[in-house]
Image 1 (tube, rainbow, N blue to C red):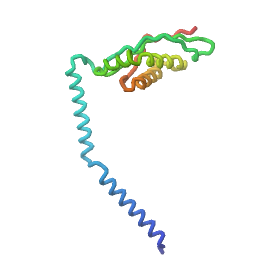
Image 2 (image 1 turned 180 degrees about the vertical axis):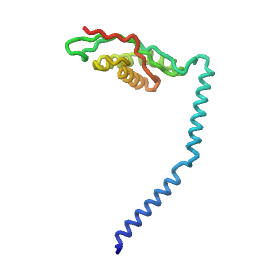
Image 3 (image 1 turned 90 degrees about the horizontal axis):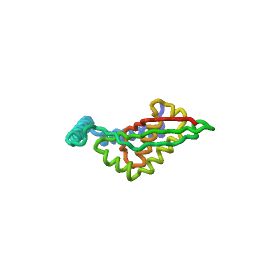
Length: 168
């Protein structure tokens, strides 16, 4: 088997590239023990957060329910030629330590934009979304839109209460 100069050059370039890659991985990758240390550090931080919640006398629970508002609106998209009247309350589940900040942002500072986005979601929902017993899509869209408007992920979950749908 006869090797020409081109083949030797290509083989040499491949070997050098592999050696450089190994050296980069060796110097850039953290040592094995550091992953364990990072997870221990995260666990320690979580314990500290839990202790802070326990020390706060106003934080009786990790999460709090905050009424965003009550809504009455119509949806013309669900059934062409008829009008669907919707009535419901929206409650946001937030961390107890963020309750006051969320109430200020959602019910005072950005109240109109939050209401407008929730009404827009309800008015543009499909019949399938409105007939879902868990209202999963509505809850997800309201949570995402509310957090987007407020510029911070306050809401961990949305509860839709007293949901009524009347076709006319």
